[in-house]
Amino acid sequence: MFIATANALEPIPAPLRDRMEILELSGYTEEQKLHIARNYLLPKQLQANGLNKDELTVDDNALRRIARDYTREAGVRNLEREIGSLCRKVAKQIAEGRETPIAVTAEQIPEYLGRQRFFEEAAERIDRPGIATGLVWTAVGGEIIFIEAAAMPGKQSQLTLTGQLGDVMKESAMAALSYVRSNAIALGLPQNVFEEQNIHIHVPAGAIPKDGPSAGVTMVTVLVSLASGRKVRSDVAMTGEITLRGKVMPIGGIKEKVLAAYRSGIRTVILPKKNEMDLMEDLPKELRDQMHFVFATDIRQVLEAALEPAKRQQEAKPKETANGHERPKRRKTEKAAAASQA
Image (cartoon, rainbow, N blue to C red; front, side, top):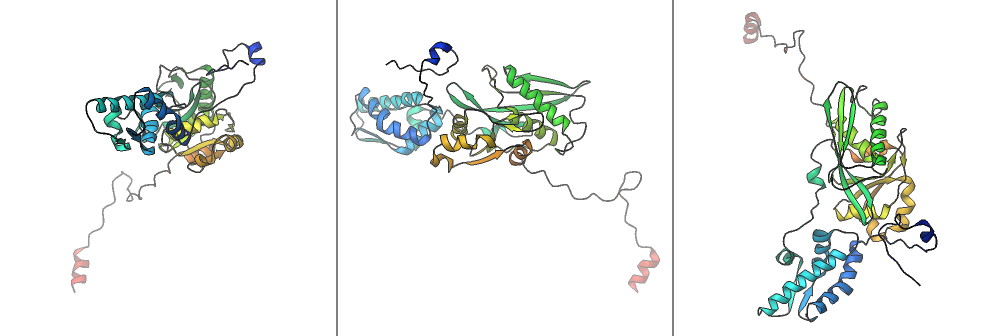
Protein backbone atom coordinates (compact mmCIF):
# COMPACT_ATOMS: atom_id res chain seq x y z
CA MET A 1 0.00 0.00 0.00
CA PHE A 2 1.42 3.34 -1.04
CA ILE A 3 0.47 6.49 0.86
CA ALA A 4 1.22 9.88 -0.68
CA THR A 5 0.53 13.41 0.53
CA ALA A 6 0.08 16.65 -1.40
CA ASN A 7 -1.08 20.19 -0.77
CA ALA A 8 -3.02 20.38 -4.07
CA LEU A 9 -4.63 17.72 -6.26
CA GLU A 10 -4.41 19.60 -9.56
CA PRO A 11 -0.75 18.73 -10.40
CA ILE A 12 -1.41 15.00 -9.92
CA PRO A 13 -2.12 13.36 -13.31
CA ALA A 14 -5.79 12.43 -13.75
CA PRO A 15 -5.17 8.68 -14.47
CA LEU A 16 -3.13 8.37 -11.28
CA ARG A 17 -5.65 10.38 -9.28
CA ASP A 18 -8.43 8.10 -10.54
CA ARG A 19 -6.68 5.08 -9.02
CA MET A 20 -6.31 6.64 -5.58
CA GLU A 21 -8.59 6.88 -2.61
CA ILE A 22 -8.35 10.54 -1.65
CA LEU A 23 -8.71 11.66 1.96
CA GLU A 24 -8.87 15.42 2.43
CA LEU A 25 -7.57 16.69 5.77
CA SER A 26 -8.42 20.28 6.65
CA GLY A 27 -6.69 22.55 9.14
CA TYR A 28 -6.67 22.12 12.91
CA THR A 29 -8.67 24.13 15.40
CA GLU A 30 -6.87 25.86 18.25
CA GLU A 31 -8.05 23.20 20.70
CA GLN A 32 -6.70 20.44 18.45
CA LYS A 33 -3.36 22.25 18.16
CA LEU A 34 -3.18 22.50 21.94
CA HIS A 35 -3.63 18.73 22.37
CA ILE A 36 -1.11 17.95 19.62
CA ALA A 37 1.45 20.28 21.18
CA ARG A 38 0.86 18.99 24.70
CA ASN A 39 0.88 15.26 23.88
CA TYR A 40 3.36 15.07 21.02
CA LEU A 41 5.29 18.19 19.99
CA LEU A 42 6.51 19.31 23.41
CA PRO A 43 7.72 15.83 24.56
CA LYS A 44 9.45 15.36 21.19
CA GLN A 45 11.29 18.69 21.47
CA LEU A 46 12.22 18.09 25.11
CA GLN A 47 13.95 14.89 24.11
CA ALA A 48 15.55 16.42 21.00
CA ASN A 49 17.10 19.22 23.08
CA GLY A 50 18.32 17.11 25.99
CA LEU A 51 15.74 18.21 28.56
CA ASN A 52 14.00 16.07 31.13
CA LYS A 53 10.25 16.33 31.63
CA ASP A 54 10.71 17.73 35.13
CA GLU A 55 13.09 20.49 33.98
CA LEU A 56 10.61 22.46 31.82
CA THR A 57 6.87 22.92 32.04
CA VAL A 58 4.83 24.99 29.59
CA ASP A 59 1.24 25.74 30.58
CA ASP A 60 -1.70 25.56 28.18
CA ASN A 61 -2.08 29.34 27.89
CA ALA A 62 1.54 29.61 26.77
CA LEU A 63 1.01 26.98 24.07
CA ARG A 64 -2.14 28.77 22.93
CA ARG A 65 -0.25 32.04 22.67
CA ILE A 66 2.50 30.46 20.59
CA ALA A 67 -0.10 29.00 18.22
CA ARG A 68 -2.10 32.25 17.99
CA ASP A 69 0.54 35.01 18.07
CA TYR A 70 3.63 33.33 16.60
CA THR A 71 2.45 30.87 13.95
CA ARG A 72 -1.14 31.34 12.69
CA GLU A 73 -1.15 28.40 10.27
CA ALA A 74 -3.51 25.61 9.28
CA GLY A 75 -1.10 22.87 10.45
CA VAL A 76 1.43 22.58 13.26
CA ARG A 77 4.78 22.62 11.43
CA ASN A 78 5.77 26.11 12.55
CA LEU A 79 4.29 25.49 15.98
CA GLU A 80 6.76 22.65 16.45
CA ARG A 81 9.63 24.92 15.33
CA GLU A 82 8.67 27.59 17.87
CA ILE A 83 8.40 25.02 20.67
CA GLY A 84 11.84 23.73 19.68
CA SER A 85 13.25 27.26 19.83
CA LEU A 86 11.75 27.69 23.30
CA CYS A 87 13.33 24.42 24.48
CA ARG A 88 16.76 25.38 23.15
CA LYS A 89 16.73 28.69 24.99
CA VAL A 90 15.70 26.98 28.20
CA ALA A 91 18.49 24.39 27.71
CA LYS A 92 20.97 27.25 27.31
CA GLN A 93 19.78 28.84 30.56
CA ILE A 94 20.16 25.54 32.41
CA ALA A 95 23.67 25.12 30.98
CA GLU A 96 24.51 28.60 32.30
CA GLY A 97 23.47 27.57 35.81
CA ARG A 98 19.78 28.46 36.11
CA GLU A 99 17.95 26.36 38.66
CA THR A 100 15.27 23.93 37.60
CA PRO A 101 12.39 23.31 37.24
CA ILE A 102 11.55 26.18 34.87
CA ALA A 103 7.89 27.03 34.29
CA VAL A 104 7.01 29.11 31.23
CA THR A 105 3.78 31.10 31.25
CA ALA A 106 2.00 33.01 28.49
CA GLU A 107 3.37 36.34 29.75
CA GLN A 108 6.96 35.05 29.46
CA ILE A 109 6.70 33.86 25.84
CA PRO A 110 8.13 37.10 24.33
CA GLU A 111 11.25 36.64 26.52
CA TYR A 112 11.95 33.36 24.71
CA LEU A 113 10.52 33.87 21.23
CA GLY A 114 10.86 37.61 20.73
CA ARG A 115 8.17 40.07 19.74
CA GLN A 116 4.70 38.95 18.71
CA ARG A 117 4.49 38.24 14.95
CA PHE A 118 0.73 38.19 14.28
CA PHE A 119 -1.93 40.63 15.42
CA GLU A 120 -5.67 41.06 15.10
CA GLU A 121 -5.22 43.61 12.33
CA ALA A 122 -8.77 43.81 10.97
CA ALA A 123 -9.70 46.68 13.29
CA GLU A 124 -6.58 48.60 12.26
CA ARG A 125 -6.98 48.01 8.52
CA ILE A 126 -10.69 48.85 8.27
CA ASP A 127 -10.52 52.50 9.30
CA ARG A 128 -12.63 54.09 6.54
CA PRO A 129 -15.34 53.22 4.00
CA GLY A 130 -14.30 51.11 1.04
CA ILE A 131 -12.38 48.35 2.89
CA ALA A 132 -13.66 44.90 3.86
CA THR A 133 -12.34 41.54 5.06
CA GLY A 134 -12.76 38.54 2.78
CA LEU A 135 -11.94 34.86 3.17
CA VAL A 136 -10.04 32.77 0.64
CA TRP A 137 -8.89 29.18 0.34
CA THR A 138 -5.26 28.28 -0.38
CA ALA A 139 -3.41 24.99 -0.78
CA VAL A 140 -2.09 25.32 2.79
CA GLY A 141 -5.34 26.41 4.44
CA GLY A 142 -7.65 29.42 4.63
CA GLU A 143 -6.54 33.04 4.75
CA ILE A 144 -8.14 36.42 5.29
CA ILE A 145 -7.66 39.14 2.69
CA PHE A 146 -8.43 42.83 2.73
CA ILE A 147 -10.12 44.27 -0.35
CA GLU A 148 -9.89 48.03 -0.88
CA ALA A 149 -11.65 50.34 -3.33
CA ALA A 150 -11.14 53.97 -4.30
CA ALA A 151 -13.00 56.30 -6.68
CA MET A 152 -11.45 59.13 -8.70
CA PRO A 153 -12.98 61.61 -11.17
CA GLY A 154 -12.68 60.55 -14.80
CA LYS A 155 -14.22 61.36 -18.16
CA GLN A 156 -15.30 57.75 -18.64
CA SER A 157 -16.06 55.08 -16.07
CA GLN A 158 -13.12 52.71 -15.85
CA LEU A 159 -12.37 49.75 -13.57
CA THR A 160 -8.77 49.07 -12.50
CA LEU A 161 -7.85 45.85 -10.69
CA THR A 162 -4.51 45.27 -8.96
CA GLY A 163 -3.05 42.68 -6.59
CA GLN A 164 -2.11 39.90 -9.04
CA LEU A 165 -5.69 38.70 -9.47
CA GLY A 166 -6.68 35.74 -11.62
CA ASP A 167 -9.27 35.87 -14.38
CA VAL A 168 -12.09 34.52 -12.21
CA MET A 169 -11.54 37.12 -9.49
CA LYS A 170 -11.38 39.88 -12.10
CA GLU A 171 -14.72 38.75 -13.47
CA SER A 172 -16.15 38.80 -9.92
CA ALA A 173 -15.09 42.44 -9.61
CA MET A 174 -16.77 43.31 -12.92
CA ALA A 175 -19.96 41.54 -11.87
CA ALA A 176 -19.90 43.35 -8.50
CA LEU A 177 -19.58 46.77 -10.14
CA SER A 178 -22.34 45.98 -12.66
CA TYR A 179 -24.68 44.87 -9.88
CA VAL A 180 -24.07 48.00 -7.79
CA ARG A 181 -24.60 50.36 -10.72
CA SER A 182 -27.71 48.58 -12.01
CA ASN A 183 -29.33 48.42 -8.55
CA ALA A 184 -28.17 51.76 -7.16
CA ILE A 185 -31.63 53.05 -6.23
CA ALA A 186 -32.61 49.82 -4.47
CA LEU A 187 -29.35 49.96 -2.50
CA GLY A 188 -30.01 53.53 -1.37
CA LEU A 189 -27.33 55.03 -3.61
CA PRO A 190 -27.55 57.83 -6.20
CA GLN A 191 -28.87 56.68 -9.55
CA ASN A 192 -25.70 57.86 -11.30
CA VAL A 193 -23.37 56.23 -8.80
CA PHE A 194 -19.77 55.92 -10.07
CA GLU A 195 -20.73 57.77 -13.27
CA GLU A 196 -17.72 59.54 -14.77
CA GLN A 197 -15.53 58.01 -12.06
CA ASN A 198 -12.60 55.64 -12.24
CA ILE A 199 -12.88 52.75 -9.77
CA HIS A 200 -9.73 51.10 -8.44
CA ILE A 201 -10.05 47.79 -6.56
CA HIS A 202 -6.89 46.54 -4.90
CA VAL A 203 -6.13 43.37 -2.93
CA PRO A 204 -2.94 43.86 -0.86
CA ALA A 205 -0.11 41.32 -0.75
CA GLY A 206 0.34 41.86 -4.46
CA ALA A 207 3.20 39.35 -4.71
CA ILE A 208 0.79 36.47 -3.96
CA PRO A 209 -1.44 35.27 -6.84
CA LYS A 210 -5.16 35.25 -6.00
CA ASP A 211 -8.07 33.73 -7.88
CA GLY A 212 -11.51 32.26 -7.39
CA PRO A 213 -15.12 33.47 -7.30
CA SER A 214 -15.54 33.60 -3.51
CA ALA A 215 -14.57 37.28 -3.21
CA GLY A 216 -17.66 38.44 -5.10
CA VAL A 217 -19.78 39.39 -2.07
CA THR A 218 -16.79 41.16 -0.49
CA MET A 219 -16.29 43.28 -3.61
CA VAL A 220 -19.97 44.30 -3.67
CA THR A 221 -19.76 45.23 0.00
CA VAL A 222 -16.62 47.31 -0.62
CA LEU A 223 -18.24 49.21 -3.49
CA VAL A 224 -21.47 49.92 -1.57
CA SER A 225 -19.41 51.02 1.44
CA LEU A 226 -17.39 53.38 -0.75
CA ALA A 227 -20.47 54.87 -2.43
CA SER A 228 -22.55 55.26 0.76
CA GLY A 229 -19.77 56.35 3.13
CA ARG A 230 -20.67 53.58 5.60
CA LYS A 231 -17.77 51.64 7.09
CA VAL A 232 -17.69 47.85 7.06
CA ARG A 233 -17.65 46.26 10.50
CA SER A 234 -14.12 45.25 11.45
CA ASP A 235 -15.28 42.13 13.32
CA VAL A 236 -16.95 40.61 10.24
CA ALA A 237 -15.46 38.52 7.43
CA MET A 238 -17.35 37.18 4.43
CA THR A 239 -17.15 34.83 1.47
CA GLY A 240 -19.44 33.84 -1.40
CA GLU A 241 -19.95 34.13 -5.12
CA ILE A 242 -22.21 36.87 -6.50
CA THR A 243 -24.47 36.89 -9.55
CA LEU A 244 -25.72 39.87 -11.56
CA ARG A 245 -29.11 39.41 -9.87
CA GLY A 246 -27.53 39.77 -6.42
CA LYS A 247 -27.82 36.10 -5.45
CA VAL A 248 -25.17 34.66 -3.12
CA MET A 249 -23.89 31.35 -4.48
CA PRO A 250 -22.14 28.55 -2.53
CA ILE A 251 -18.38 28.11 -2.55
CA GLY A 252 -15.83 25.58 -1.23
CA GLY A 253 -13.28 25.45 1.57
CA ILE A 254 -15.74 26.52 4.27
CA LYS A 255 -13.92 24.96 7.23
CA GLU A 256 -10.53 26.37 6.21
CA LYS A 257 -11.98 29.86 5.73
CA VAL A 258 -13.80 29.84 9.07
CA LEU A 259 -10.64 28.67 10.83
CA ALA A 260 -8.73 31.52 9.17
CA ALA A 261 -11.27 34.01 10.50
CA TYR A 262 -11.04 32.51 13.99
CA ARG A 263 -7.23 32.65 13.98
CA SER A 264 -7.44 36.34 13.04
CA GLY A 265 -9.75 37.18 15.94
CA ILE A 266 -12.90 37.55 13.81
CA ARG A 267 -15.97 36.00 15.37
CA THR A 268 -18.73 36.87 12.84
CA VAL A 269 -18.65 35.22 9.41
CA ILE A 270 -21.08 35.74 6.52
CA LEU A 271 -21.55 32.61 4.41
CA PRO A 272 -23.84 31.47 1.59
CA LYS A 273 -27.01 29.80 2.86
CA LYS A 274 -26.33 26.70 0.76
CA ASN A 275 -23.07 26.12 2.66
CA GLU A 276 -24.83 25.83 6.03
CA MET A 277 -24.79 22.03 6.02
CA ASP A 278 -21.09 21.99 5.10
CA LEU A 279 -20.41 24.10 8.16
CA MET A 280 -22.44 21.86 10.46
CA GLU A 281 -20.70 18.73 9.19
CA ASP A 282 -17.09 19.95 9.04
CA LEU A 283 -16.68 22.43 11.89
CA PRO A 284 -16.40 21.12 15.49
CA LYS A 285 -19.27 22.12 17.76
CA GLU A 286 -17.00 23.84 20.30
CA LEU A 287 -15.80 26.19 17.57
CA ARG A 288 -19.30 26.83 16.21
CA ASP A 289 -20.42 27.85 19.69
CA GLN A 290 -17.72 30.52 19.86
CA MET A 291 -18.66 32.17 16.57
CA HIS A 292 -21.67 33.84 14.99
CA PHE A 293 -22.68 32.95 11.44
CA VAL A 294 -24.91 34.86 9.04
CA PHE A 295 -26.26 32.74 6.18
CA ALA A 296 -27.25 34.81 3.17
CA THR A 297 -29.10 34.10 -0.06
CA ASP A 298 -29.17 37.71 -1.30
CA ILE A 299 -26.50 40.38 -1.25
CA ARG A 300 -28.78 42.74 0.68
CA GLN A 301 -28.62 40.37 3.64
CA VAL A 302 -24.83 40.58 3.43
CA LEU A 303 -24.89 44.38 3.36
CA GLU A 304 -27.28 44.55 6.30
CA ALA A 305 -24.98 42.39 8.42
CA ALA A 306 -21.66 43.82 7.25
CA LEU A 307 -22.15 47.60 7.04
CA GLU A 308 -22.30 49.85 10.05
CA PRO A 309 -25.58 51.76 10.49
CA ALA A 310 -25.86 55.01 8.57
CA LYS A 311 -25.13 58.10 10.62
CA ARG A 312 -28.15 59.97 11.83
CA GLN A 313 -28.97 63.04 9.83
CA GLN A 314 -27.77 66.26 11.33
CA GLU A 315 -30.28 68.40 13.14
CA ALA A 316 -32.37 70.57 10.87
CA LYS A 317 -30.55 73.74 9.87
CA PRO A 318 -32.15 77.15 10.58
CA LYS A 319 -34.43 78.41 7.86
CA GLU A 320 -32.67 80.40 5.19
CA THR A 321 -33.83 83.35 3.15
CA ALA A 322 -33.68 83.50 -0.60
CA ASN A 323 -30.09 84.79 -0.54
CA GLY A 324 -28.95 81.83 1.56
CA HIS A 325 -28.48 83.69 4.87
CA GLU A 326 -30.25 82.90 8.10
CA ARG A 327 -33.33 85.06 8.67
CA PRO A 328 -32.52 87.40 11.60
CA LYS A 329 -34.89 87.55 14.54
CA ARG A 330 -37.03 90.67 14.75
CA ARG A 331 -36.11 93.07 17.47
CA LYS A 332 -38.73 94.52 19.68
CA THR A 333 -39.79 97.97 18.64
CA GLU A 334 -39.48 100.82 21.10
CA LYS A 335 -43.27 100.89 21.48
CA ALA A 336 -43.40 97.18 22.25
CA ALA A 337 -40.49 97.55 24.68
CA ALA A 338 -42.25 100.37 26.48
CA ALA A 339 -45.44 98.34 26.67
CA SER A 340 -43.62 95.40 28.17
CA GLN A 341 -41.99 97.64 30.79
CA ALA A 342 -45.38 99.04 31.69
